[in-house]
Length: 193
Image (cartoon, rainbow, N blue to C red; front, side, top):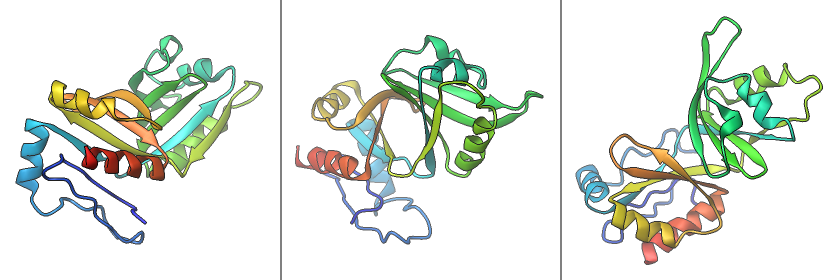
């Protein structure tokens, strides 16, 4: 069973079995310079280690989230992402997150060390709103990034996972979000192509 995985491109691709009880994420897969060059010259799948997810559903989900973070959540459309800060009543930052808007839910992507805290913080303000909060344990993420033409080739072969625009600071990027099994299949397909 793959617990973590990475793929840079067809020539440098690597699917590596890592024990589920590994103490730390793998920093590289043997040749960091070659992996970095592949990300610049074609496209790369980057493992989203250290993230956790909270799913927000219900008719009042947009209004509820809008009241707790620094971005305009009510205007988001399915397929959009937005960075946001969750703050306390004094305006102090409790968590930094990426909000992912799907047709029937929002997903909050944040540091795994803040997931339970943020879930409890939001939950204590639920009174009469039609909102359900749940921590997603079976959701993983990859960031796919690279040159536009190579990125387009990789994106055209992807199905069975959520695909959302992302930001990595230097190249077009998309978050792939889904179950571990579905992301492993995406990586295997990318290697085969």
